[in-house]
Image (spheres, rainbow, N blue to C red):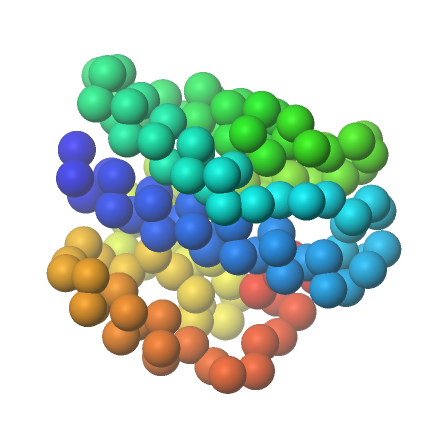
Length: 139
């Protein structure tokens, strides 16, 4: 399932960056400071690959649970932050991400690009605005 993997991997990486950057907003971003890290993303990436290889179809609920509740959520101690991280991940681990017209933001700037070579993803990311708006951080 290479298309699913690439679209969802981009979504996972976007999610990872989003939750890291929310820390810069203090208590507006997260009620508590959390040490989200590269290993959280790496284990989520490996689980994504394994789940897509092992299950028929895409196990959306399992991926959302493992990512938001276990891998990243294991660090989250505030109840409202836990609900928030689950809601945010559901924007990236959803059936709609496989549609070419699905966007992560209201402006339509942020989305998972079509499957391509590594250089196409890098070029796509470089096309993002230098100044971000609150919409990208779910604020």
